[in-house]
Length: 415
Length: 175
Image 1 (tube, rainbow over the protein chains, first blue to last red):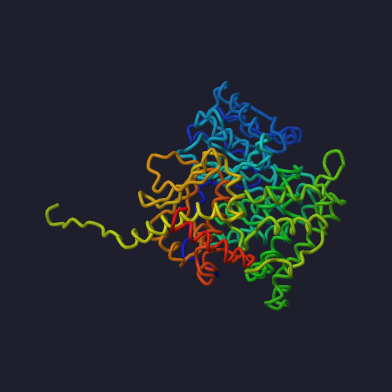
Image 2: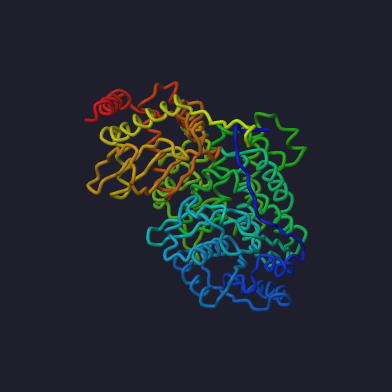
């Protein structure tokens, strides 16, 4: 166990998890003094009938609900301000975010604007700018991945500078996280795979990057174990309610872990790919995860090696020599991505050249890699990566992740 | 109340003096590095004109303030009293800052241990931390600088010798 000289850990979110957890929301909101919540969601979630499930669960205890379902795939500043004006005009007093990371981040952004009566959301960008509690926020994730329901971070796109802005504050933590297995039952297999790999990345980076601590490690280990044991079976049998709940809990645990231990270069580069090429975050994470581990292995191989246990199980861990465990863990993650690629009929991308946009064209043209590397240098997660990452380093990793070739570790610059 | 003796907390005078001197030196060295090192200049080029940042210690400890003027020049403003900051990098207490400035704990480790409080834009904070890393490599002997940065850079000998000499000269003379 690694015990740093000093660390801080905090999770102030009440978590309600189970097969019929949604029905608890009215009582929990009343405890917080709210009576007219606004549901923020996106059209995909609404079309899947999930908002109806939530509304029915609220019906008996809290019938007056405003629904706003026009959140784009990448939350942006304009959407936040538009929804905030609806919230104020309808006289709402709480927010229920029903969706994935983009919806959660949008709800957090809206909460900043309505609570601070802000004219410009950008005034609150950065770390620690918020100074007081916001309106009650209930987070109902419909993907098992982002962990946004327990994180103090919101990432919101600013199209004017083509950059994802980071908002960090304890006040961005939702008051309540509701994990209900009904919310992820209809998630398509390729999205189940990508979002779960996002959660896997949260847990693995929390465990292997500079801010790791014993409490986060415990959450991260269990998250990796739950995902490793349940993801492939859920992709094969999407109606597996127990497996769905296990993945939702894993995403929650991973969210708590990385919210306290932060993440490293997989997210540094992933945020940048998302900002420049609009590739879904989970896809970026699943592709970049083995590369981030390879790049840092000379610094944190010990921690990566320990993760072989929850990734591959006791037998493989015990049969692998200590000095080989980190390499084996990376190989297992690549095998995992390959298995997901096959199980989803090729919709789970293994490298960036396989990622297609909505029109079926390559989403990450090779000539954009330099832009991605440059943008990455302004991402806060770079601070927490064990090894230094400069422009050449970022470009080298992106080139390998684009082509799908394992990283040539002899090219990684060391001190 | 009468039976209790009032205790005044001890002041870490030497520690505070050391931090004040180091901040003064680092502040001047940043300006010197901006004038001498193309990498530092490139980092400042990404910051907007008028951008002001500080590095200091809570609650009211010493700090140093740097501003990039509208004409692009970089100035050290001392303690910068009354200046409005675009970016505040603040260490949470004196002892933590002493550990950083005495190289018992690297900047990245201090940040990972939540000792650093960032108030302002993240991309700008990244640029400023990179500037601080370069300045530390210029100012410190290799065996100490290796403790302060994540990766000691593989610079050319001209940068190690000539640029470093210029940084030192300009830091001391203010030219």
